[in-house]
Length: 116
Image 1: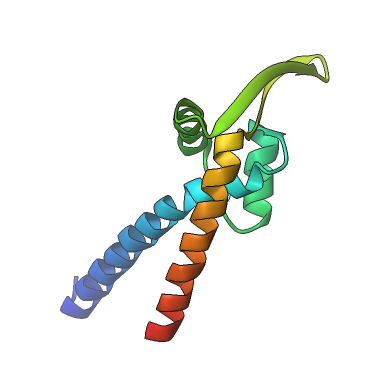
Image 2: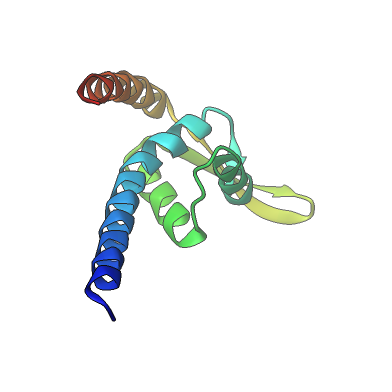
């Protein structure tokens, strides 16, 4: 492999690692915001993907469990289309935290725009 191809591959790897880190930090905010409307796992994944925040099941469901354990989400099993599905929604604490996180995100966004 030539040195320029090798350097290009290293840059691609670094970019991908940093991109994933950036997305990972944004996913809890995206999930909380999307859950202002009740969803079950599949419809939540679809909603996020439709807005450019694709997430795989192996990332989404542990995140949902963690947010619920933290008291930010409430869930309920219900039958729909003859199947049991777990529906998630923001808890009262989740609504408060989402509001605070959105203020923080807007502040970070403004700061980054100033830096750029």
